[in-house]
Image (cartoon, rainbow, N blue to C red; front, side, top):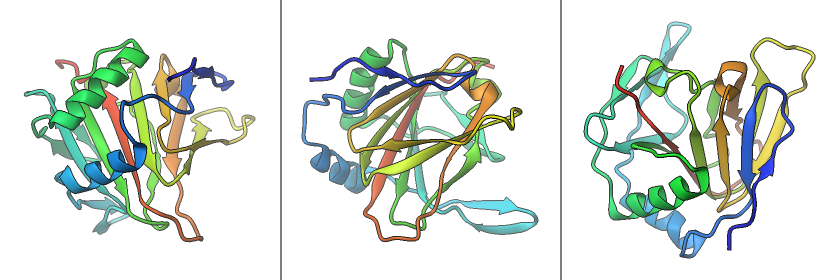
Length: 199
């Protein structure tokens, strides 16, 4: 059974955290199903004039027209699978918000990561609700304030089956990312549900 969320004590943010949510099925099986059924893509990113593969695999699913542009790349959604539709319905209920798309990230091992960023693209609106669902290896999401250097970096472990809801002015004030690890670790799949607006 899903309990009440914890309100995370981070200034200039609105973060709710469910350490474990009831998704109606085994978390390890969900992880394997997501790995097997998702149409994963390996994309390139250019930083400081050098192009290299992103250190993870990604996939974008959603309603028709829910296209998304980030890091200079446009992503047109693939149709929802039955599993993703079921997870969307459950996450919408817990988040109290509708979602028309989901970005999936597949971290295959310790060297896969996500750079520090904010989900602040125009098509998400000024105060987007982002619901982040995690499966597999526990990794730490870290937050860094965009302007206040007096605030320490905040590290949040995300166990398998956890749900983090970022809303309000969080994206305006904070960036978040996932560091590489120096120790061995297993795979992790993260789903970030969001609502793409007409712009």
